Image 1 (tube, rainbow, N blue to C red):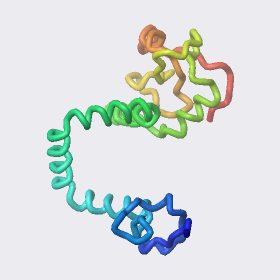
Image 2 (image 1 turned 90 degrees about the horizontal axis):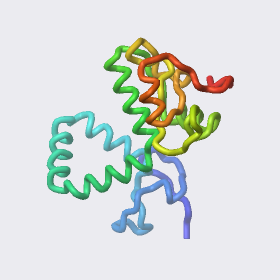
Image 3 (image 1 turned 180 degrees about the vertical axis):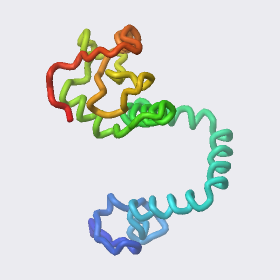
Image 4 (image 1 turned 180 degrees about the horizontal axis):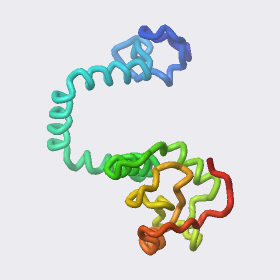
Length: 169
């Protein structure tokens, strides 16, 4: 049995795991790769934003419990994506630079470990902006540190750097 397939859109040969499953096709997989299919759907959504907003709203209201279950699981499994997205939103509201993406957060965890930089706990952790965005600080990797919620709250809007002397850039 073949383990590769050629995408009908981009003509690239890829592994079957890079194609959505589709029982209507002989090989059990879609004719377009996942990347091309996502691009197609993205174009549809961008061309008809109001239609898809309403469609999503209706689905969420009909499947409220299922949606909450899904979002709870997604948030638990994608903490770094959620944090990066939330910080970009906050930075936009404060009118400050935001360049942090999920990879930056994972890099900081690799460098410092996933623990509070004050008490070393691994419980209830959060991202702290050393120079707070409310005081003009940027949402960039060199302005972030990991603190537990308790120490982050105690720090408030003070400018305190708890990081050991390492080059994070």
